[in-house]
Amino acid sequence: MQNPPIFEQAFQKGHTEKVKFGREKYELAFYVYHLGDINLPTGKIIACDAFILHNEPFVAQFPTGQFPVELAVARLSNGDERVAFARIKFLENTVATWKMATTQEQRIEDLKEGHIFGYGVDSGTGCFLDEAAYPLYEKANEDFESINRKLTETYQHTWTKLLLETEDMSVAIFSSGVGDGLYASYIGYDDTNQIVELITDFYLIPWLKKPAMPLP
View 1 (spheres, one colour):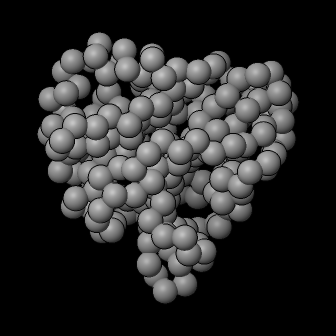
View 2: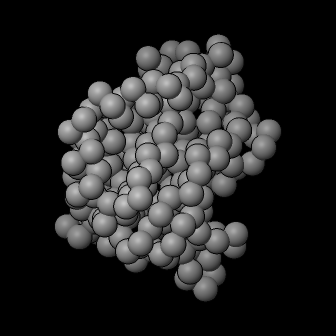
View 3: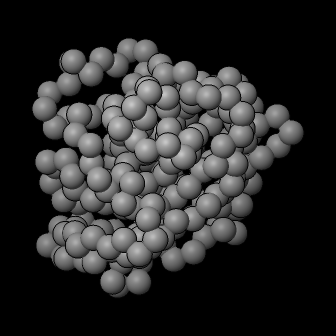
Protein backbone atom coordinates (compact mmCIF):
# COMPACT_ATOMS: atom_id res chain seq x y z
CA MET A 1 0.00 0.00 0.00
CA GLN A 2 0.95 3.66 -0.13
CA ASN A 3 3.20 5.02 2.60
CA PRO A 4 1.21 8.14 3.48
CA PRO A 5 3.58 10.73 5.03
CA ILE A 6 0.68 12.19 7.05
CA PHE A 7 0.71 9.15 9.35
CA GLU A 8 3.95 10.46 10.86
CA GLN A 9 3.61 14.17 10.06
CA ALA A 10 0.40 14.47 12.07
CA PHE A 11 2.33 13.57 15.23
CA GLN A 12 4.97 16.23 14.63
CA LYS A 13 4.55 19.49 16.52
CA GLY A 14 3.51 22.40 14.33
CA HIS A 15 2.46 20.38 11.29
CA THR A 16 -0.32 21.96 9.21
CA GLU A 17 -2.51 20.76 6.35
CA LYS A 18 -5.10 22.44 4.15
CA VAL A 19 -8.20 20.31 3.54
CA LYS A 20 -11.73 20.58 2.23
CA PHE A 21 -14.80 19.27 4.07
CA GLY A 22 -17.79 19.39 1.75
CA ARG A 23 -17.62 22.85 0.18
CA GLU A 24 -15.64 24.45 3.00
CA LYS A 25 -11.85 24.76 3.15
CA TYR A 26 -9.91 24.64 6.41
CA GLU A 27 -6.34 24.77 7.63
CA LEU A 28 -5.54 22.12 10.21
CA ALA A 29 -2.88 22.68 12.86
CA PHE A 30 -1.83 19.45 14.57
CA TYR A 31 -0.80 18.72 18.13
CA VAL A 32 -0.35 15.46 20.05
CA TYR A 33 -2.42 14.49 23.07
CA HIS A 34 -0.88 11.77 25.25
CA LEU A 35 -3.78 9.69 26.57
CA GLY A 36 -1.70 7.37 28.76
CA ASP A 37 -0.45 3.78 28.63
CA ILE A 38 -2.70 0.91 27.58
CA ASN A 39 -2.11 -2.55 29.00
CA LEU A 40 -1.84 -5.31 26.38
CA PRO A 41 -1.41 -8.63 28.21
CA THR A 42 -1.98 -10.84 25.13
CA GLY A 43 -0.91 -8.52 22.30
CA LYS A 44 -4.12 -9.35 20.42
CA ILE A 45 -5.65 -5.93 19.80
CA ILE A 46 -9.25 -5.01 19.03
CA ALA A 47 -10.15 -1.65 17.49
CA CYS A 48 -13.86 -0.87 17.32
CA ASP A 49 -16.70 1.52 18.13
CA ALA A 50 -16.41 2.19 21.86
CA PHE A 51 -20.09 1.43 22.51
CA ILE A 52 -21.10 -0.92 19.68
CA LEU A 53 -18.59 -3.65 20.33
CA HIS A 54 -17.27 -6.55 18.30
CA ASN A 55 -14.72 -9.07 19.49
CA GLU A 56 -12.55 -9.74 16.43
CA PRO A 57 -8.89 -8.94 17.15
CA PHE A 58 -6.44 -8.14 14.40
CA VAL A 59 -4.51 -11.11 13.04
CA ALA A 60 -1.15 -9.49 13.79
CA GLN A 61 0.57 -10.40 17.04
CA PHE A 62 1.53 -7.15 18.76
CA PRO A 63 4.05 -6.78 21.60
CA THR A 64 2.75 -7.38 25.10
CA GLY A 65 3.07 -4.95 27.99
CA GLN A 66 2.14 -1.31 28.51
CA PHE A 67 2.44 1.14 25.65
CA PRO A 68 1.54 4.80 25.10
CA VAL A 69 -1.61 5.82 23.27
CA GLU A 70 -1.30 9.10 21.39
CA LEU A 71 -3.92 11.16 19.57
CA ALA A 72 -3.06 13.48 16.68
CA VAL A 73 -5.56 16.30 17.18
CA ALA A 74 -6.27 18.75 14.37
CA ARG A 75 -7.26 22.28 15.35
CA LEU A 76 -9.36 23.83 12.60
CA SER A 77 -9.30 27.48 11.63
CA ASN A 78 -12.88 27.85 12.94
CA GLY A 79 -11.84 26.70 16.44
CA ASP A 80 -13.06 23.11 16.25
CA GLU A 81 -10.69 20.31 17.22
CA ARG A 82 -10.89 16.79 15.81
CA VAL A 83 -9.02 13.55 16.49
CA ALA A 84 -7.42 12.80 13.12
CA PHE A 85 -5.39 9.73 14.13
CA ALA A 86 -5.11 7.49 17.19
CA ARG A 87 -2.10 5.28 17.66
CA ILE A 88 -0.38 2.85 19.99
CA LYS A 89 3.38 3.36 19.88
CA PHE A 90 5.51 0.25 20.44
CA LEU A 91 8.97 1.35 19.29
CA GLU A 92 10.73 4.60 18.43
CA ASN A 93 12.07 3.06 15.22
CA THR A 94 11.31 4.56 11.81
CA VAL A 95 8.39 3.02 9.93
CA ALA A 96 9.54 1.51 6.63
CA THR A 97 6.26 -0.13 5.56
CA TRP A 98 2.56 0.27 6.34
CA LYS A 99 0.05 -2.58 6.08
CA MET A 100 -3.69 -2.39 6.63
CA ALA A 101 -4.64 -4.18 9.85
CA THR A 102 -7.06 -7.03 9.23
CA THR A 103 -9.06 -9.55 11.22
CA GLN A 104 -9.20 -13.29 10.51
CA GLU A 105 -11.90 -13.09 7.84
CA GLN A 106 -10.50 -10.07 5.98
CA ARG A 107 -8.22 -10.59 2.96
CA ILE A 108 -6.41 -7.62 1.46
CA GLU A 109 -6.35 -9.30 -1.95
CA ASP A 110 -10.17 -9.22 -1.99
CA LEU A 111 -10.31 -5.42 -1.72
CA LYS A 112 -11.09 -3.26 -4.73
CA GLU A 113 -8.80 -0.30 -5.36
CA GLY A 114 -9.52 2.56 -2.96
CA HIS A 115 -11.58 0.36 -0.61
CA ILE A 116 -10.69 -0.41 3.00
CA PHE A 117 -11.30 -2.86 5.79
CA GLY A 118 -12.13 -1.04 8.97
CA TYR A 119 -14.60 -0.75 11.80
CA GLY A 120 -17.90 1.04 11.63
CA VAL A 121 -18.54 3.89 14.06
CA ASP A 122 -22.09 4.80 15.02
CA SER A 123 -21.45 6.44 18.41
CA GLY A 124 -18.86 9.02 17.36
CA THR A 125 -16.15 7.17 19.30
CA GLY A 126 -13.50 4.53 18.66
CA CYS A 127 -11.30 2.54 21.00
CA PHE A 128 -8.32 0.22 21.42
CA LEU A 129 -8.33 -2.70 23.84
CA ASP A 130 -6.66 -6.06 24.35
CA GLU A 131 -8.62 -9.21 23.61
CA ALA A 132 -8.32 -10.20 27.28
CA ALA A 133 -10.05 -6.95 28.29
CA TYR A 134 -12.96 -7.43 25.90
CA PRO A 135 -15.35 -9.45 28.12
CA LEU A 136 -14.64 -7.13 31.04
CA TYR A 137 -15.28 -4.03 28.97
CA GLU A 138 -18.37 -5.62 27.45
CA LYS A 139 -19.78 -6.02 30.96
CA ALA A 140 -18.71 -2.50 31.96
CA ASN A 141 -20.40 -1.20 28.81
CA GLU A 142 -23.75 -2.28 30.20
CA ASP A 143 -23.45 0.81 32.38
CA PHE A 144 -23.41 3.11 29.37
CA GLU A 145 -24.28 6.20 31.41
CA SER A 146 -21.28 5.77 33.70
CA ILE A 147 -18.80 5.60 30.82
CA ASN A 148 -20.55 8.39 28.93
CA ARG A 149 -20.42 10.57 32.05
CA LYS A 150 -16.66 10.06 32.30
CA LEU A 151 -16.29 10.99 28.65
CA THR A 152 -18.37 14.11 29.23
CA GLU A 153 -16.03 15.10 32.06
CA THR A 154 -13.05 15.04 29.67
CA TYR A 155 -14.87 16.77 26.81
CA GLN A 156 -13.30 19.78 25.17
CA HIS A 157 -14.52 21.57 22.08
CA THR A 158 -15.20 19.41 19.99
CA TRP A 159 -13.83 16.02 21.08
CA THR A 160 -13.38 13.77 24.07
CA LYS A 161 -11.12 10.99 25.31
CA LEU A 162 -10.75 8.54 28.17
CA LEU A 163 -8.34 5.87 29.36
CA LEU A 164 -10.73 3.61 31.24
CA GLU A 165 -8.76 1.55 33.74
CA THR A 166 -9.51 -1.05 36.39
CA GLU A 167 -7.26 -3.64 38.03
CA ASP A 168 -7.98 -6.04 35.18
CA MET A 169 -8.33 -3.95 32.02
CA SER A 170 -7.56 -0.73 30.25
CA VAL A 171 -9.45 0.66 27.28
CA ALA A 172 -8.41 3.73 25.27
CA ILE A 173 -11.50 5.64 24.06
CA PHE A 174 -11.50 8.71 21.82
CA SER A 175 -13.70 10.72 19.48
CA SER A 176 -13.61 9.58 15.86
CA GLY A 177 -12.65 12.45 13.60
CA VAL A 178 -15.75 14.01 12.06
CA GLY A 179 -18.00 11.39 13.65
CA ASP A 180 -19.58 8.22 12.32
CA GLY A 181 -18.14 6.29 9.39
CA LEU A 182 -15.89 3.38 8.44
CA TYR A 183 -12.29 3.73 9.60
CA ALA A 184 -9.25 1.60 8.80
CA SER A 185 -6.28 0.85 11.01
CA TYR A 186 -2.71 0.35 9.80
CA ILE A 187 0.38 -1.34 11.19
CA GLY A 188 3.76 0.31 10.77
CA TYR A 189 6.79 -1.98 10.45
CA ASP A 190 10.45 -1.04 10.57
CA ASP A 191 13.04 -2.37 8.10
CA THR A 192 13.54 -5.49 10.25
CA ASN A 193 9.78 -6.21 10.21
CA GLN A 194 9.26 -5.29 13.85
CA ILE A 195 5.95 -3.59 14.66
CA VAL A 196 6.53 0.09 15.43
CA GLU A 197 2.94 1.30 15.81
CA LEU A 198 -0.73 0.68 15.21
CA ILE A 199 -2.69 3.68 13.92
CA THR A 200 -6.37 4.30 13.18
CA ASP A 201 -7.06 6.87 10.48
CA PHE A 202 -10.22 8.94 10.97
CA TYR A 203 -9.84 10.37 7.50
CA LEU A 204 -9.53 14.06 8.06
CA ILE A 205 -6.69 14.01 5.54
CA PRO A 206 -7.97 12.54 2.24
CA TRP A 207 -4.87 10.66 1.08
CA LEU A 208 -7.15 7.92 -0.26
CA LYS A 209 -9.33 8.73 -3.25
CA LYS A 210 -12.58 9.09 -1.31
CA PRO A 211 -15.13 11.92 -1.39
CA ALA A 212 -14.70 14.65 1.22
CA MET A 213 -17.16 14.50 4.11
CA PRO A 214 -18.93 17.61 5.44
CA LEU A 215 -17.91 18.80 8.88
CA PRO A 216 -20.77 18.29 11.39
